[in-house]
Length: 313
Image (cartoon, rainbow, N blue to C red; front, top):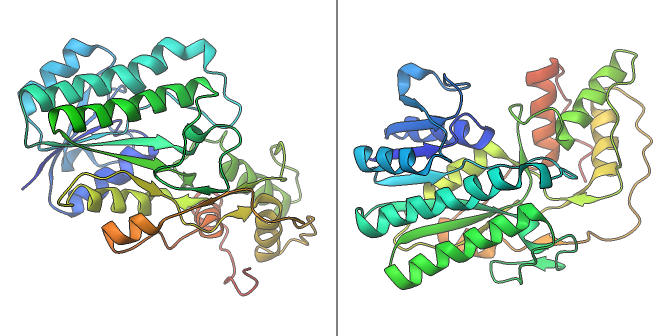
């Protein structure tokens, strides 16, 4: 039985990963800042309430538990347009400082342990390259991206200098019914659900953009697979199938009985994810895209079943 530790178990990703690892039989400890487990049955694992930005307390926990797998999914982050200036010290501590604590634990106490850390599409800046791979040039043009890029470099340093088993996942957008309301897919689905009831719903800033949306629970299954690989590797986590927001909104509207009519995009996707290394290393890739995730949110949060994807692009 593998001893696993999830930092950020009360978040979307941490909670789905916890369920995945428990189904696989891991001996799991989860850490969150709240007093109780938010999504996962606390009878199934050990829950530890802890502010991991208290570095000494985090280090003591690592020393006491001696986990074989560390999943660092805690993060200070927000939706598109989020202003990190007001939370910069927290973001620096949680996104970077706590990672250093974990890597030092691997270096000094647990040379056989493994660590996973998630990076982000934002690591490539506001204008990412047309084809994004694990080797694409990273650009730190936002505060969140700065923390993620510094963390990526820290992982690579400890891997090269100290032979630590540590991998980075470059996450493209991934959502679920557990994603907070201020993210795009929850807002879009809430708007469509309200329109179906005859209202208007929350505003959506724009539908004129491309995005590669995946299923958060599916991504976490792939993360668990990566931690069983022979060698650490950094992988792009994406579907490889970008969707235009306006086209997605139109398909969803028609699928739930609304008229649709949103203008379709006129140009090609602004970027794509190259998931060939993921397929090579893990033998599979995400199957569910933004339409599937939005349908999931509509069903779980609004009680609306989406018709089959006969109109899918």
